[in-house]
Structures are given as C-alpha cells and as structure tokens.
Length: 407
Image 1 (cartoon, rainbow, N blue to C red):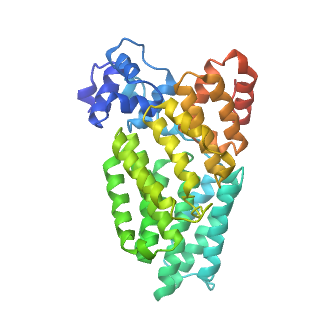
Image 2 (cartoon, helix red, strand yellow):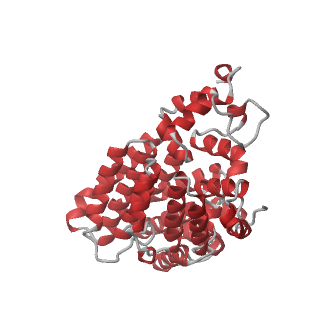
Image 3 (cartoon, rainbow, N blue to C red):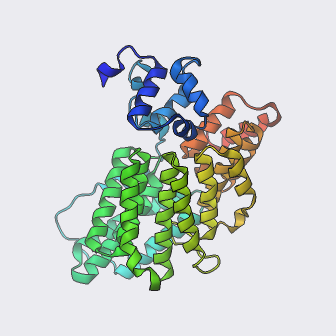
C-alpha cells in the first residue's frame, strides 16, 4: 500500500481509499456530512485538503487507523483522537480481560438474580442522564458475577447463565463504543458471541449477531454485517407466527440494523425495504412496546426513518419525518438524545447551523453522552466552535462548556 500511495496528494489518497472500499462519492459525502461534489472537489484538488476534524472523520469512515495514510505526514493514531477515554474503561477492561482456570470459591448467584441485575442495568442505560458513568460503575461486578456463574454451573443452568452473560457483554459494548479502543470492543463482542453460542438459544444468538453486526458496520465491513444479521433473522423466522413480543421485536431490530447498514453503503432502495419489514412487525406489537435493550417498537422505527434519510443525504426529507415524531414518545433518554442529534445532522447538512446548535443542546438535555461520544455530533460541534453563528454564539459556548471543551 505504501508504494501505491507514494507521491499522491491528500485528495488522491482519499480517492484511493474510497475506491478500495467500493464507496461512491455520494456515499462517502453522506457519511461525513458533505455532498458528492465536495468529495470530487477535494479528490481532484479543486479544494484544499480538509481541516483536521474532517480528516479524522474521513479516516474513520474509510477505515484508516493512521492519519499519515491520508496526509503523507507524520504518524497520528486516529483512534486516539476520535475516541475519548471514559474513567470507567479501565475497570471494565479488567473485568473483561479477567482470566482464571479455577472455579469460584463461593456459590454463584442464581441465574434469575443475575438476569434481573442485567435487566436493571439496561433500564439504567435507557433512563439515566449520565448513563456511561452509572452503568459503567455496575459493569465490572456484573460481568464478574455472570462469568463465575457461567463457569460454575452445569447443564441447562449453565446454558442459561451463558445467555445472561452474553446480554451483559452486549451492554458492555454499548458503554464502550466510541469510548474505548477497538481492540477491547472486538474482544467484548467476540466474547458475547461465544457466550451466546454456548447458550444455544435462538433469541440469544440473534442478540449477539445484532451486537457483532454493529462492530462490523463501524469497521466498514457492510456485506459481512448484512449477511450475519439476516442469517440471525432467518434463525428466528420459524418461531415468529407464535413468538412472544420479545422475539418479534428482536427480528424487527435486525431489520432496522440491516436498513442502517444498507443506507450507509448508499443502497437506498434496499435500506427502505428492510425498514418496511421492521415497520410491519412493529405494528404487530402492543401500543407503546419497546424491547428491553434494542428499544425496538414503533417509536424507534420512526426514529430510524430519520436516520436513514440523513445517511442517504436527504436532509429535507429527514427533517419532515422528524417533525412528525413526538420526542417524549421515544421510551429511552439515550434514543431521544440520538433523535435530536439526527435532527441536528439534518439541519447542519442543509446549512442551518443555528438550528443545529440548539438541537445539540436539546440532545445534551437527555445526557451529554448523546453528543460527547457521537462522532457525527462531535464533527458538528467542531464546526460550530470553529465558526460560531453570531446569533447563537453564547449557545455554542454553552454547548462547549457542557461537553468539557475549550472555546
């Protein structure tokens, strides 16, 4: 690769990596909040190379670990710049990387007790304003106790314990994403999948596929993500005619997952086909239903409709969809924060930076995590800080203060 990049400008390098990943200009532009024409202008040298925040975003989307591969300058680790380090990460890492060959010296907690603790932690994730700190503080002991039970028990109880352990690893992935190094995230999702395989339960395997698929998508491995998630949906399908709500919701969540993946690959028709499947099954669920951790239900399907249109570079349509959503109907602070971020993305794409500023503040009202740990939101924040709109200069300062950033 070094020989292929030798002597190339930053724009030419962007084109090289874009084509190597099979991305069109509209797809790359949509993923970084710019137009296809902007991508072409950068690649051909009609525009100067982007500033550092945009270079970092391009490196993330193109799967580049070292910014020097884009700029040709000195090495600069992209993950060190794009992912903060939450104070809970060290103790969570220690629990995840805990190795032992001896059975616990005490009796394990009953599986039902552990299941209730994991469910309570998921509720905290969706209701707390400082969710990463609150759930992050619970995770080390929760992971340790679930690991011990999965190791100590036998037979049917052992499989049940592994199902709960898999669920705990899925929660850990949520806490760690964009806040820890990729190596730790891959270890977490891999262990979650291994626990699900030991549990040998279709619903547990589907949940693991949903979580692994997230990491595959972040890594740009779109086809692998779609294949895995749809394989998991196929495992659930024989049970759907008489399935309980949680099984229907997981199948629907897998369809939404595929919709987002297809949209980020620039395949709009395919994305909306998956979204339609999710919408159909969501309407079979009781009014107001939300899956315990994917939050799948009619409100989440509507939210994903906004996300898809933003990802497909249709900001006006996204905003029209958003106007029909009552934020309080979204049964999760985490998802409400995401809703306001998606609206901010739509307005920012349309050049409406005042509206984007105020919506990011609304997102912070649901917990600053919604903005602090979102690469897309932070890209907007960087732009606002660099060029604050005069009418909302004080709001930009307030936004930066709430995120702990200097202005």
